[in-house]
Image (cartoon, rainbow, N blue to C red; front, side, top):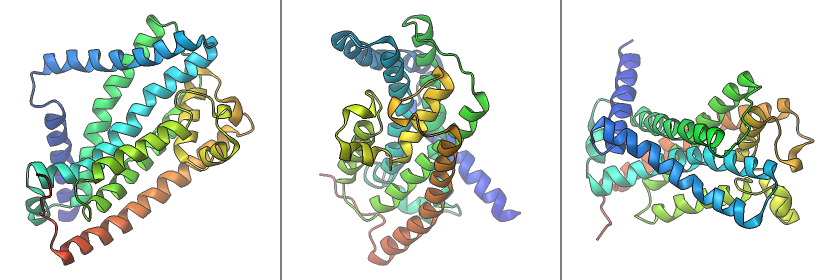
Length: 277
């Protein structure tokens, strides 16, 4: 019971810390305005792309939903891995977090949770803007499929971020480029802003191996009623099965890999190394 309460306290405290850091300790009203303006401004890039290529309406809806939910992939996956660099290099508190009577794994989960909550605000605002202003027809006819797929996807994304965080313990500041590069790979090969059919055959094969492809497909089918034509042969049950394996598999892998990386970092004495200049 003591261990469980310690884990819960670690998760709760790190989630609150993450919220305060993400908002930069700003006034809640001002941060709310910022949270509304930022995602709407970002989605206009997709709108401009749609106008210039004169794409059909259903393609714009796919682009819109893909861009909106990609925010989770970037903010949570990259954000969690960046926590290590931020706490170690900028705030110089990482070694104290390890020394404290807390679980560093659940500390990172708490930070991932705060990033998920903040991103959810942005996603809801952007979806509302898309429905009211851009005339995106959001029908949301598969609520249970959406909810289960969303939870499994977020668990997998957060776990992948923790895997990257463990690797970051062994790296210098170059982790910034590694995280962004991975996010770019997912942006290109998961069909975020264009159908998978425009990719070469090897690119389509790679896309169908990436779990984020199926996560975005699940959100599109749930919110729009249709998805990428290249995945028409994949049933909802198959998508759910893939996401279930993705979530559980990456969660187990993150536990094993993060412990290995932390033990190796301690052995090398590099938990508190600073490499920025």
